[in-house]
Length: 88
Image (cartoon, rainbow, N blue to C red):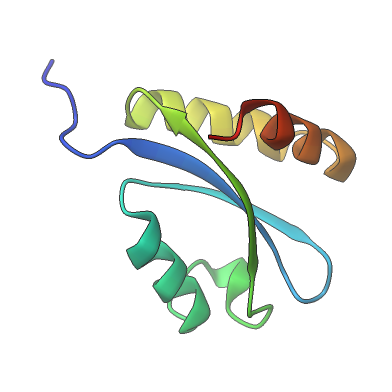
């Protein structure tokens, strides 16, 4: 299996309503622009603008998706702890 050319990252956003959104991408700048223009995830369409709280690099898309799933199962406090511990 070939390695992805662009590195994958898991990111955590804080929405204007105080909720968090966790996602993955291999182009963070483009993805953040999509969120802020209302073309990102359905959840974030009416909750912007956003604050990027952190990113965690992943080896590939599969690893990023698994980490995203794990993070989404955590409480708000635990999500912050994961990103504070592993952010780049």
